[in-house]
Amino acid sequence: MLKMVVCIKQVPMVSELPWNPKTGTLKRELAEGMMNPACAHALEAALQIKSRHSGNITAITMGPPMAEEVLYEAIAMGADDGILLSDPAMAGGDTYATSYILARTIERQCPNFDLVLCGCFTSDSETSQVGPQLAEELDIPAAAYVEDFEIKGRKVRMQRISDNFLEIMELAMPGLMTITTRSYVPRYPTLGSLDEAFEHQQIKTFKAKDLGLDLKTIGRSGSPTRIINVYSPTAEKKNVVLKGTAKKVVDDILAGYGDKISGVIGKDLKKK
Amino acid sequence: MNQPKNSIWVFADYRNYFQNRVTLQLLAKANDLASELDAEVCAVLFGYETDEYMAEYIAHGAHKVLVVEHPSLKQYSVEKYTALMEKFAREYQPEIILIGATSFGKEFAPRVAKCLDTGLTADCIGLEITADGNLLQIAPSFGGNLIAEIITPDHRPQMATVRPGTFKEIPHNDYLRGEVVRLKMPKKMPADRLRLVAYERQPERDQRLEEAKVVVCGGRGMGSKSKFKKIFELAQLLSGEVGATRPIVYAGWAGDDTLIGQAGKHIKPQILFSFGISGAIQHTAALTDADFIIAVNKNPNATMMKMADVAVVADANQVCSALIKALKERIQSKSD
Ligand SMILES: Cc1cc2nc3c(=O)[nH]c(=O)nc-3n(C[C@H](O)[C@H](O)[C@H](O)COP(=O)(O)OP(=O)(O)OC[C@H]3O[C@@H](n4cnc5c(N)ncnc54)[C@H](O)[C@@H]3O)c2cc1C
Ligand SMILES: Nc1ncnc2c1ncn2[C@@H]1O[C@H](COP(=O)(O)O)[C@@H](O)[C@H]1O
Image 1 (cartoon, chains in turn red, green):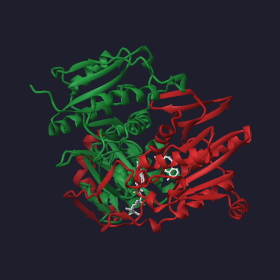
Image 2 (cartoon, chains in turn red, green):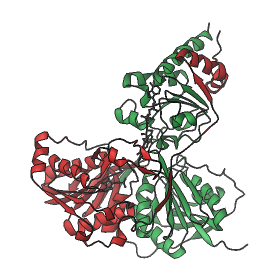
Image 3 (cartoon, protein in one colour):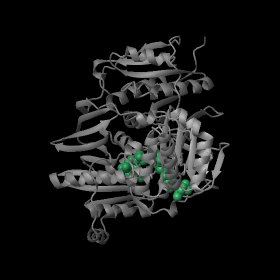
Image 4 (tube, chains in turn cyan, red):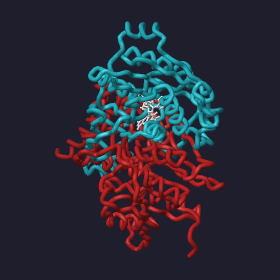
């Protein structure tokens, strides 16, 4: 029986959110949340292992209360239970603090785990840092950007592409992998299974103090990095503005820059 | 000459040397930073039989190369490299460690940062020194069209990763001098819990888009997958390559090898055509080396329009069609 943990983040559905220029923060409340795509692939990988080897899957997410939606979704897809870490004190943390919280939770709530799976990145921050840092916190071996793997006894044999190399590696369990979005296409939860997930309350919710976390080590105060300024990029060039019908602007472009284009592409663009 | 007080380390990522210039780009940036910090620039190299790289790094601005050579380091190993970096960083106390955001770098840097109990900013697009001597890490943030300035005030070293193509290298200069410092491979290394069983070099990734003189880039403003095909047609007429934004790649209007931006390719065309693109920072971060930009957008206030040399306020799809038509006539008329 394999004990697996999948770390799942809820991310905004739209990548361009309006922001408040006064506070410099995103108007996240306007966004609908969804399961981060790479996390869904990681969960799918766990589900396929479970169906082949028998196992147990715990989905963990840290986020605002509404992040529990992704846990119900995970359970509907086939995870066994979910853990929601939600506490204002955890907010604003960088990957150092996030991986600390996830590690302490896994140690306490999922002792004797065999495998931790993460997405290789999140679509909203794309740092790819949480997985590798979580492995350091748990002091277990890890491989990032894994495309495919199988379990062989107490080892995981995996394949990945790292820079220009196709690598086949063996990882001793317990271990951690971050999964790319190139394989393990996630299944859709059926509507029935979603209803069922909501009925069975398999979700545990914890705050920092429930986990015995020192407030100094989490959230903003536990983060070595500090954001000191946020702004909207303003790249202003003195430029030429062209307006009018498509035909007119194309004529203008070719009249003004035809020679330039012609020079670069090495083709004559003069009107006959 | 006095010994500089501080050091700035650049991880020597020499695998795929000829395509991967990020180490050289970081050495150049480290030189800028060093002049403000009274620091020396060190390339930190783990490997075996790496003399040619040491010479290269010195010719590209490394004042020092710290080297650990050992047969067991022949292949990259994230566990060994992390252990070595941690050990030597504790010993030498660099102010700053910069690491290229290659696949390996993205896996390696977070682990080093965790071991050294310090912060790490991913994918910086700018690095500066603040008035009080901190490393200012400038990076796109929050998934929005925003730039954040980040510091690591109370922890050392300060760490950042940087995507290839973000900074410019110092041209190769054989007259530059530097020192090679060989460090001993520690007797005790942690047991390898991750074992490389086999590996195979993949065919070189083609660099046509990165090297293209003309890039025709399309975004969501093109309207639909079928209309987006015109981008391909135009690129072909202009002997150029096709680029796309992330929504286009997600929607499958173009392959993921066309993605331009933070998560994709950095380009340096002489002429860039940009159709129906808003100009989010994750996209424009990769356009800093484009010489001449012609942007078409309905919205004259789009960021992409402000950074263009020629801002065309019109329907992207119609302009694309009209340009194709005009070019076809003109290119054919040559042979008349
Ligand atoms: C972590 C992270 C990494 C990212 N990495 C990348 C990356 O590498 N590359 C990338 O591109 N994006 C990336 N993004 C996404 C990026 O933030 C933007 O969402 C994306 O670049 C927007 O693409 P777009 O300009 O095509 O679409 P939109 O932002 O929707 O812009 C469409 C534009 O088309 C114009 N338009 C609409 N209709 C017409 C018309 N008929 N004629 C003319 N103009 C019209 C609109 O005015 C608008 O300006 C990333 C996001 C995150 C969070
Ligand atoms: N708040 C979170 N809760 C649970 N898992 C997370 C969280 N943030 C990041 N992760 C995990 O770390 C992976 C990489 O995230 P990132 O480092 O933000 O790119 C994600 O795919 C998740 O598996």
